[in-house]
Amino acid sequence: MEIIPAIDLRNGKCVRLYQGDYEKETVFSDDPVSIALRWQSEGARRLHLVDLDGAAKGELRNLDAIEKIVTAVDIPVQVGGGVRSLETIEHLLNLGVGRAILGTVAVENPELVDKACRRYGEQIIIGIDARDGWVATRGWLQQSSTTAGELAARMIGLGARRFIYTDIGRDGTLTSPNFEAVAELLSQVSIPVIAAGGISSVEHLTRLAKLGVEGAIVGRAIYTGDVKLTEAIRSV
Image (tube, rainbow, N blue to C red; front, side):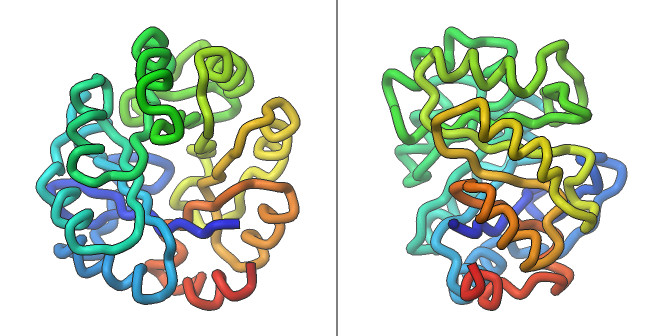
């Protein structure tokens, strides 16, 4: 299982939110590039970047920080948050981003997902962000009438190759992942799933590995020191 450090970008800074609440923000660094280099030096083989401003506004707002990180590191980077057009996907991939994450458009514009999956294949990830089982969109500020399972089935039909499943209620809380929801999604799909939300110990990571997820995105826990990245990678 791959452990993927998260770097959430807001106003050019590296931050973490509590349950996706923009009013509950903790700034961990004014220099996201140094954070990216730190996680790389500690053994990360991939980075997960989210443009929080972009997720709320509908277009990338931290492109400068994203470009600087991609240029600075030697490991693949995946980017989400405000990726809602084929032009944006192409721009990110041309910058050197390895994977583009589609979340809101998976619910609101499945035709775009269809085109993106056919054009870019493995470079597209579908982000399924759920609160109490219901998919949320637009930076988690709006709740849809679609369940995580329904969205997954629809996206597989459009050619999706990989999912990131985030439990919003657990994200940034340092409690525990929603193992039941992750297991349920894994039982419904036959493509790789990356889990996120609530991870706060190496034990959580080993349990996710046993469930069969391809990867786990770790955010607040590696910033607070609850999870030591090198130790976690060694353990898993």
